[in-house]
Image (cartoon, rainbow, N blue to C red; front, side, top):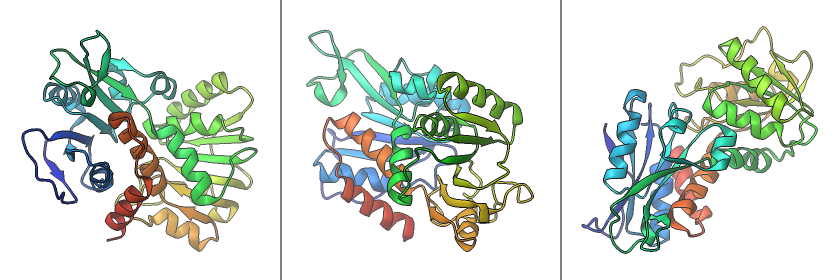
Length: 309
């Protein structure tokens, strides 16, 4: 595992400095360190936020290592969010509902016998546990509403990808009162399983596996296609024309304009990348760790500088 930190601090690292990190594979594209370190500095915390390349087979030992070293917390990105459900000691209800963990808070036993976040404890605790949360779901809908100016109620949505991020997005979007949801995934059976799950949880939403035959209000890309500049479009161009899509939201934020977003813009669709989603899930994670309100504007500015540099 290789780690790196971004954004210099005025306060030097010392023996009391505490650490947070994001685990992913790949992770070199992550803008989370820039965003989180800016927020941490604004809050005056003697913390640092790192990025580590962690293979899926190493996730359990990597989480245990952070626990042993008394990290404040972790963020998890592709492909670790579903895997972590069976690794963390405690799963918060929302993470259980969404079926993915993207934020971990390490907690110790206080003198009162209660489990408390590590920053609240005066002395290093003997027992530490990992507590898993999901901050992605609320971030997805907030970013779509703000960045695309779109209320999801009554809309027809096409979702590409049924993995960890896709499943969370599908469940959250379905609960916003949309009219219809179309699911497309590389593995057809996985999309079918997700469709059945959504139908059981949100029976009022019509869910179909496959491409829509008519126009849709929103195309939401939850696949990793677009991370590389040479990537193909994440959908079958024989099955869908972007001219029939009013708006496109790509969860990828680097590059800032993916192949999908370029094509959508050329077709006249309204577009937005995943910066807003990254911002809001990261801000929520910082609040879970620190117990303080996240400095949203400071974190947004750091993200924009990092991504557009």
